[in-house]
Each structure stands twice: as C-alpha cells, then as structure tokens.
Image 1 (tube, rainbow over the protein chains, first blue to last red):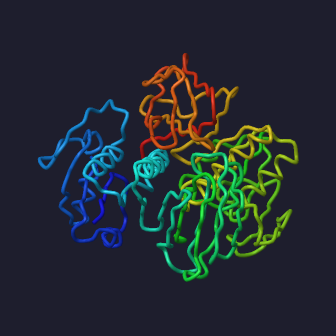
Image 2: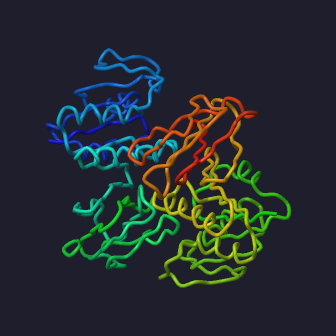
Length: 209
Length: 209
C-alpha cells in the first residue's frame, strides 16, 4: 500500500496517469489536485491545502492551512502521508507546470528520503526519483528508445556506477557543472543496475514527446 | 555584446523570445536550434551540433560533432561561445522540452559560471539563473504577480539573504530537502537584493501560465 499525492499541476492524459493508482492506495489531493482527482475518477482519502490554487475550500477538505506558510501544498501532503506511516509515495500533477514547482518537488523527493521513504514524481512522459547510497531501483519506462538520465542532487558531485545501459559507468563522478549523465538508455533490464556510491542522484526517465 | 545560444527545445511565442536577442549579439544555433533560429528570423553566426535532433546536416553548419559524445549540443555551443571570449550567455529553447534536458541545462549555467561567465535560460514564462557568492542580479520578470524562487544548487544547502521581496530573509539556510525558497515575489525592485553567502542558488522567475 502506497500513498498517492495528487497535486495541482497539469495532467494531460488521465487514463495513462490513472495506471499509477492501485486499489487500496491512500490518495491525498493537495489543493488544486482535487480537480485532477475528480478527472482521474478517484475519491481522495484526504483533501488538504491552503486552497489558493483551487480558489475555494471544497466540502471534502480534511485539513485547511494558511496561505502564508513554509510548506508547499505538495509538501503538506507528503508530511501528512509520512505521519500516517506511509513510506512509498507517488506524486502526480507535480511536473509540467511552473518550473519552480517542478524544482520544488525535487526537494519533496529528498524530504521523503530523509524521512525513510521512497518516492517518484510522474507525468505522462517522465518519471523522477532520488537515489542515494544503498538504494536500488528498476527502470519504470521500459524500452530502449526512452531516456535514462542521472544528475547529482543536493551535492557538488555524485559518484555512480551503472550497468545494463548504453553508456555504463564504473564509479564515475558526475558534477553539478556538467550534464554527463543525460540521455543514457536502458539496454538490458536484466543486468540493469544503478548504484550511487557518493552523494545523491536525481534519476530522470523520459519518453520522447 | 552577448552570446545567444538557440537550442532545440520547443518555443511557443517567437515574437516574445526574439526580444532577448539584440543587434550585434553573437548567435549560435545548436542542432535542432537551427529550426528555432529560422522561425525567430535570426541568421546564426554559428551552427553546430551532432544534428541528431535536426535529422540532417544543414549547409550552414560550422562544426559537426559525433553523436556519441559527453557534451550536449547546448554545452557544445556554450564551450564554443566561451572559447570566442563571450562571458554573457542567454540560452533560448533550453526549457520546456524533456525534463532531463531542462535539468542538464541547469548544469550548463553552472559550467558557464565556473568559466567566468554569466548566463540565463529563458522561455516565454521563465527565467533561470545561477547565483553564487559575489553575484548580483536584478529581476527580469517585473511585476508582483510573478514568482521569484531560490533553490540550492550543487550543494546540500545555500545561505541566502533577500530584500525587496514578499518574504525577506537574513542569512537563511535553504536545504535541498525542503522547498523553502519557492513562490516568493519581488515587491520592491528598488530595494531588491539577493545575496548568496554560502553554496550556490538556482534562481527561477516564473509567470503564472
């Protein structure tokens, strides 16, 4: 059982995005995410936020927060989910809107990790995860035509080994000042492995639009 | 005189984007950026890349690079501009496409800074810059309705002071694991100042779409 956070960002293909939500998942709609939840045909278990982006407080609101606050609505939802004991999060509607929101949501992945959870940000063509030493992941977007990129996050550089990809690396240093990790491809899901030895890495999978 | 790099990312409003190009600017079109240059009505001073995204090598190509390389086409353009002695860069067509490209281009800003230059990534609604200790900037998107956000970049945290904004800070620590710096507003351009004391910061200005 995982926690699905539905945020207010633009969702284009509701059928595709619905596939990330399984029966039994705990669904939190954050502010304008209520609208996305409706169009996804999902009844959230919890609705929260300052409701600035929705423009009104819906009847289903479980928790109402002030507008002037340090947390974004997505972070409020994440904190709520963590407090409920969830350790796995999928965030929908958190990419593809304002770029500052997208980058803010990268830090939500880091926040979740810091609190013992795992998470991903997804849109129709993108999956973003944060990887640190000890973490293991499998690719989500299968197919050699998709892109698998790694970038250091929250650090000057990350040291990363990768196998099962077009450009394998062995304890390669990836610096914040050079996009060495962009546009790799998973060529062999069987032998695929990405290991972060030092630092943390933002792992971004993209489908060509 | 500055160097304008035109990359292959989607440009929606060519008239608006044209305003970032001044007479006398040195214009480099990177790969598919040639198409954007054409639609901007700009004749590039240099056309370079592996021409994978364009799909053919244009007659105007100044430099052709292999597909299997460590540099992105945008970074090739940046290196070319730096080698020509430019210290100010504006990158168009570097946001709003694949998210991995956008994040890769953040590191191009860092690369330029590391080599003594200043730069910005722009699209119709967004301006992204990288700020380090000693740097001074003014807001580009004027108007209190626009968003002014800061995020640590290439570091675990950045220490930042801000004045002339809705939420001023005094040597505030901004962590990579919390989006404290998102959705601020420039309220007074006269007294506006953002100072990075430690670390580096990605400064993102956004217009609500």
